Length: 387
Image 1 (cartoon, one colour):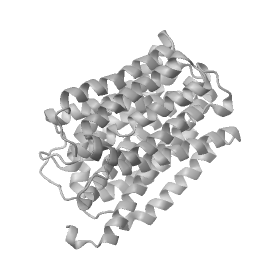
Image 2 (tube, helix red, strand yellow):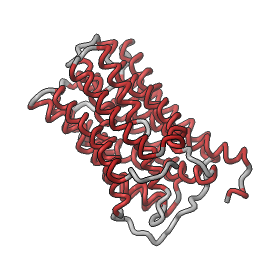
Image 3 (cartoon, one colour):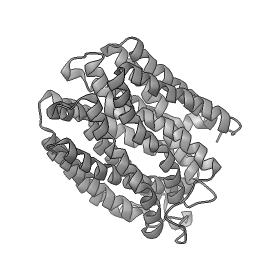
């Protein structure tokens, strides 16, 4: 397949796949940046908001078996394009919700589209990485994080200027649709590891299950930052309204930087050491704002959490996508089924724990997930040689 494509053609494939990651991150962070605004406008308590936020991971999980099977049947290119456009459109619908029930129903659809795009674009990334014959997966996820940083910054600006969420989201939705149409012809037309005989539901083997558990812990941390970092800054650290988004912006900034550096670090240190270090950074980063809640400590702590979470999911997905037992799409879907349980239980768990204790205690629970990544990596990847 490599011989059929010119070097410039492969670069265009990489740019197109990377653009999908950017659009996905932009859409996700646009929603995350306005969660405090929407919570306040609906006058929802933390427990109520936690219940509503549970709807998004429900949609994510519902899409998991469908996404892997659909990509295997019709290819990641088609699934990626359709899901990206619909994802942007559903973002607009979120801003039009007028009740917790409406918001929850739209969040189910938002989560469904989010993960359909996630599996499809990661399948494209695995295929491009195979053409390059070297590790580049983290750089794709770096594009997602770069977009998250941009989306968080834009969101903070929108909040400062009192721009309504519907205007903000409409602009983002139109941009996503336009760019998606531009990159369509540069995506890889077919997936190498397609097997039309594979079933819709696939139970991950032991190796994929272990990778899924590591992803699970990381995704709880990512979900906490996306859904609760702004609320933590406002309620616990008591920062000014215009500074609420700075913690999340710090998180996304170091996550983006870490992902662009991760491939080089893996080459020098090995996958196991990078993952263990990542877990320790998450643990330390969450302890700082819990112990000393203030604007400066929130920014510092979330910077460390961003650096820690930056490489976990890309490395896990890269390993899973090269599975010798399943197609790339099915292997990624299988690992995501376990990993995205972190999104299912993480944000609502924080809300419930906060409701019965405090947000500071709930963030301690999330910090434990970082320590678990280090422990799990020691157990399942310590013997892995540097890749």
